[in-house]
Image 1: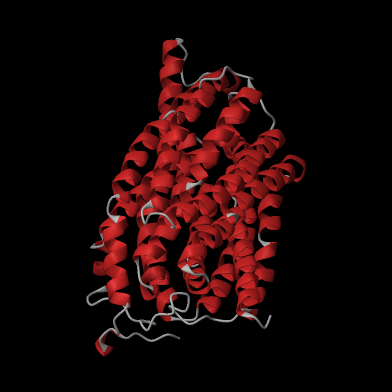
Image 2: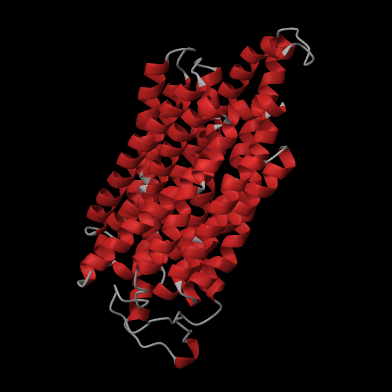
Length: 452
């Protein structure tokens, strides 16, 4: 690994694997939702709360860990985070009830909070702006690939060996990758831009610099909206397939994995390549690609949810197209953050973005969808003249209908998200211009920071 290109490719490959493990471990709970619900008698609101508890700790822990990614060795931060979340993922299989599982899952969230800020900061220093979208799209392939493998593997394991075994198996790969990332070199901050800025940032408090960048504010709002939708889908898609379309736990995992894995991977790559291509023509190109594809996903989501019970082929086709469009968001918006922030603030910027993305978006996605599902279930039961004390077998069809109605929240939020992204595209050129003007100057020594 002597050439810079070879070293960068190696690091990107390891970071892709780490991100895949990140999302694999995160989604095990979603893959085993139905057997867990039946064993412990949980409501959809409780299931949503398990996801939200993870997300809340993930979002809050991301702020100090994101700042640490800008000040300390990013390889060591990733390695320690991996060891933490992998161990707690495996321990989740020893849970004896709702609260013990909730405690383990919140711990996983703290460990995983180190991943995105440190990893994307490394990529920003290894790849030039013109190719950064493609590099980030490869890193973000870990999201659909990890989710897909988690659905498929965890679903099969849960079907044949029980849901606890799914957690035990999920914890293994992280221990191997924790050592592999330490073989990488720590790049100099700002290396890809060849700037004198190094570890400096524009005058003022780093959080103030980030939050007074107009495009960053729009991106933060978009993150909250997008993650609301993505976590609503990922938390309840297998359950929806099982309840409404009659799939088995194993088949629901395989279908969900195929949708999110294959289609999500294609959408992620599509976003990276088209975003870079349009960015070379106009500075707001990446944000425009994100806006138009999100708007295109809305009617496709409605069409998928409109299919009759058991119409798995039609549902899968429309949902695949919708998810293809939705996954374009990640590489385009992540690369836009690197376009508008200096190298020494990218880890912090990602952490601030993730705080809103998860605290205001993902944390509400599962629990809000679960609450809506329970609400519509009770309404359907009441309309049919049944009491909540009726046998579970009698109430199952109403749970399917309740979840269907709840899932319509996704296209509604999608409309708002598309508008926010389009509005954000209007401020990109000004933010990039101001950043480039500052990067051409040597910043005052008082704003130099340590680069561990």
